[in-house]
Length: 287
Image (cartoon, rainbow, N blue to C red):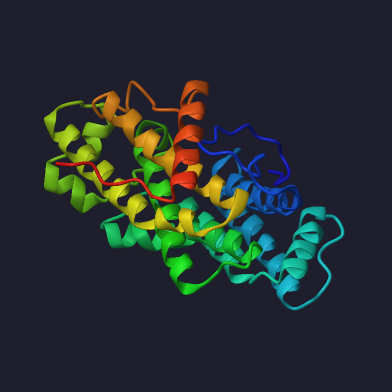
């Protein structure tokens, strides 16, 4: 398995999009390539688990070299580029290591007993991305980090609820097992794509939770200036739009995987622009 393999991925939200300042698109692209290729090591191809762990350990060794100010491997240009980005923008290395820790966990861990367990995972799989971005823009205050963590983990949860059927084919269930038990849903129900009131009640609960988390973090987008702030406004509304899509199919994500199409992209941009210009984050729905 080669970590440099090019694999197509559907993305809800643009990476290094035109909304970002031009000078930031290249470093964001390098950071994205690091995260994407590391995630692919855990998820893609036919390597054994032992090989996947070893490949991610090699990534961590490169990060250790960067943290120590040592040269990276000459046959891994990605890390030379990453070292330049980290040095130029004075970024912490720990968030990159946290991402690797989460990807490594994905190789073996296929179920989460409680939301606390799942949140520990998203703390490493999602939150570092926002923390790195805040670091790039020198906006990494404690208040901003707390909101960013809510936005990033909410996006991760939204992706999980969107991809229940996709993850099942990878033998993964991200829905917390105790939530499933509370609503009477089992792994067998997911495998059989059982779509009934139990399933709708479970998904309604998870969608509402993700929405509250997103709304809790949303004020960050109004505090961030310029085009990065507009990007964040669009990210917030992109996540909320996916939740609307899930609700529009009555939570039947088995047969109707919610995605953002071109019309949704325009809707998300206009909502994001309105949020940016109005200076007011979205509100929770009444009732």
